[in-house]
Length: 403
Image (tube, rainbow, N blue to C red; front, side):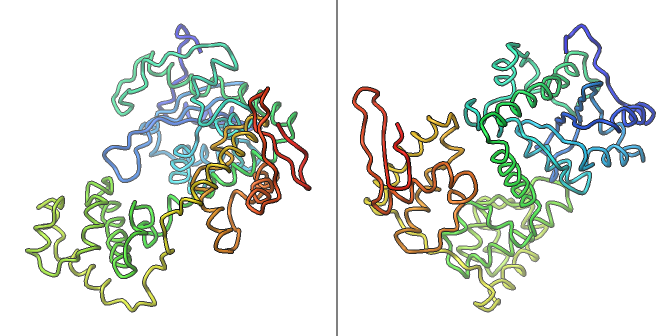
């Protein structure tokens, strides 16, 4: 959208109703959001940008969220007959799920699709627009405070550009995926993203698993962390503040490792605000004591982490080289195929003769690279270097030589 054109800005019930009438018969729509997440438990949705082949608009969410027409809008967004096109849509889908009560499906994420056809891992929207359309987007409002009102003409135009090109990009990527026979691969990745979005609203009793370092605790301490994290989840939601505004992750870990039994001990815990100790000290101590009293059968089950052996590290590096070669040939971002953690998990599973229930060995990843990696670990793969092309080559009984 050119800055000389006035963006369509929806700020009333009647305007939203008119937009919904225009959206009813569309087969797909581009969606994006602007939100503020620094000061609340759930990020505050400020704008919803929507575009179809016929229309495009910016919806001022605070201005319309109290009317019944918004329910009609959510019904259209969640209509399974309408394909939703997003870019790097994890947070957008999560916000839609909060307000609409479900994840809008089906959806097509252009960032994921772009990584599968040679644009690189996590390509930015502006970069993708420039490479596909040759247009350079203005980034002047990247750090705009979207909760401030009124919004300027330039801010609205900037926001609307986030969906202006999405449908054309969708056409481009859909065509390339179809030509390469990777459309089903992309839909597998969209399903994985849907699962990840669903996990962000997991039960409070499972939130502790998102705290870095939880799996290094002893099982009894992990039980304490689990109960403290669940308490924090409820408290942050009740007060509508970010989780770390209540108690930071590292403080919860400290309380789990060295659980205080008296209020004075709790007050001396480094990093715990005195106001939080005053407000919820008794509740925190009671939560800790209840967790300590749980039977061992109720403790979290921890995997036995171990430091990778030098031989294991060498195998991971070999597998990384194979993954990069596969990715280069297929024009797919290597990290979309497998991360170093994925490869380490594969090596350890093979070493321990564990069940090979790994994403790397499922769906399109198994077809493209998983079987080759298994052959390498089983000694069935011959790996060489082409001195002229300076490229890795390999062959096995099951696979055609590759270079």
